[in-house]
Amino acid sequence: MAIEVTLRQLRAFITVLECGSFSVAADTMHLSQAALSGLVKELESRLGVRLLDRNTRSVSASVVGTAFEPMVRRVLSDLDEALANVTNLKELRRGLVRVAAPETLSCTLLPELIAGYGERHPGVDIRFDDVPIEQVLANLHNGSADIGFGPAGVLADEAVQAHLVRVDPLWAALRPDDPLAAGKSVSWKALRERPLINYMPNLSRNVLGQVPARLHPEQIVPVHRVNTALSLLHVRPGYVICPSMARSLVEGFGLVFVPLCQPAVNWRIALFARSRPSLSPAVESFLDYVLATAQTDGNSPAPRGRAAAVRGASARRMANK
Image (cartoon, rainbow, N blue to C red; front, side):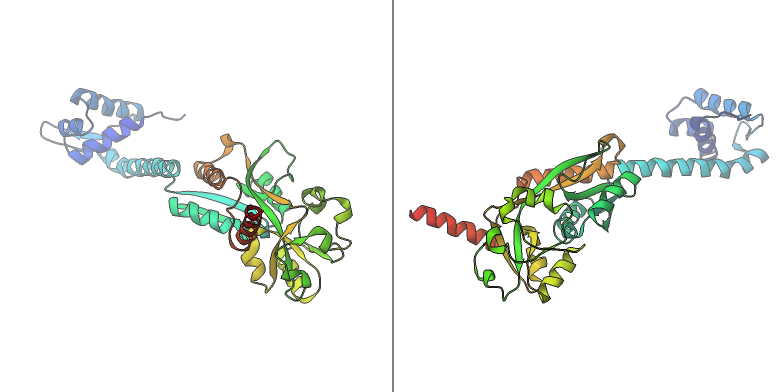
């Protein structure tokens, strides 16, 4: 049968030993001497042994108390450590966030978000897994990921919530020797006869569903990764569709990147997570950071680079009319 003792009784026992006096120990614990003595006596009564030898001048551990002392200190130390760990997790001095995302976002959006969050909470460990979107969702369901990123609209499950975090226009990656690469933009109609080297899952729903059927590519070459698509384009004719945020990635392959228009199509990026009651403080904090960043950005990146030049030129033409 388990013997029930309290933490206050154990702390009273240790404090008396450390102070060597009931009166000093009582002051240390902000108790009356009678209250402190009562805690120790109750502990001894429940254990059925004498833990302290008392006389008018001093107090010391009995034989049993001497053997009991290191065990009590270990229990109290483990408890203090556990409480400190909980406090660190709550105050984000420690924690773990497991993030999963497909390659396109792994090379573009995610490094920026992880770095920004890390500056605010350097004690939180962000572990990142670069996997296909199907595996992102599977990892969320099996608990191996806390946060997932991917195209909005791929999720149909009440167990996981989707939060729109960014809307990015789709651009076309072209070979430098392609005549269309000389233009400031390229239309779906102009690309129709070129092979689309496609790495995007659910292309028909997420992209081509926003484009009239008469402008759909005549040939689609399927691959699994954006790096594979860009590498393939480097050595064969065709084009690759990427969100505009992938500009540095595309140009790193020696390709030309231009806005895709008529019609312009946006790529909607979502964050996937389980309901908030099941999230740790660190995961909830990362979720809030990403959503706040999305609101600051207005769910759309500010125009920059070539896109800014195109929009600026368009604005100047309108002003001159």
